[in-house]
Amino acid sequence: MVKKAVLIGINYPGTEGELRGCVNDVKRMHRCLVDRFGFSEENITELIDTDKSKIQPTGKNIRQALSELVGSANPGDVLFVHYSGHGVRLPPETGEDDDTGFDECIVPCDMNNITDDEIREIVDKVPEDCSITIVSDSCHSGGLIDATKEQIGESTKKAGKAVKTIEEIEQEERRNGVHVVNRSLSLESMINMLKQETRKDDIEVGSIRRSLLHAFGEDASPKVQETEGLKAVTKKQVVRKKDKGILLSGCQTDQTSGDVRTKGQAYGAFSDAIQIILDETKGKKITNKELVLGVRELLEYEWYPQQPGLYCSDSNADAPFIC
Image (cartoon, rainbow, N blue to C red; front, side, top):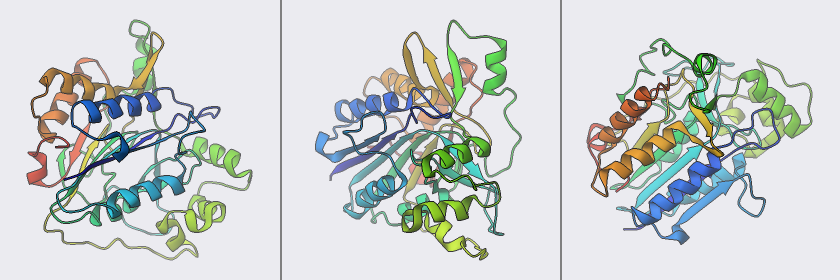
């Protein structure tokens, strides 16, 4: 059995969507994988955008890293992915269907978005007798593995939004010097950042996918390539005897995840809560369900509005986190 991981942290420095805690989340998870779960350094791939000597988390590089992670796996291997960065929801443009009505995406540093459909395709390539755990500390991360059973959460039930938003909490108080911003990109901000990245000024709502194709060509999302020409795309319902994907999401599809800044430190509220709960177990095994429920309780106690979710098969819900 080999344990392999891909860790992605994107702070988007110098942009209107700049975050502070994402790379810190990755560094912290890296140490956790080595110290607690016995991962070897050579089997952990990091993609971060605050150090130009490291692999940059572009859309192309993230796709390649995930493809290599799954493509090199053998039955019995342990696969793990941690993503900290922006999330975005793209509304339908070409008549495609989705269980949440949107494409949930993670946002690489070059804006070459990776959709929930792509994550699903990657998960489906995982070998038998092998699973892949994905932690996504990003906005709209619920349901990021398309068509996965919702064990904890309300995303596919199209529930209403949380009672309080991060913005409302900010207006109420700064909580002992804690500053919280969300890890969500509005369509307007995403378009502005895409314009900055591609130096094209003719990008607008309603033609985002076409603009992504023109900007990134064959490196764009396969769905983006498929929808060029306004072809309708209908998702195929695939019967899976055992879904090999395990998603721990920082929030529901219609919620935002917090990027927290306090006393010179920055981190994701979800990533931080995971580490706190793991520390409390003192090395004992904890199931995916127990971890998500513990994180939910902790974030609710701290008055964060986000509600983490768990998406996986019944057997994987009760399986130990990671290994």
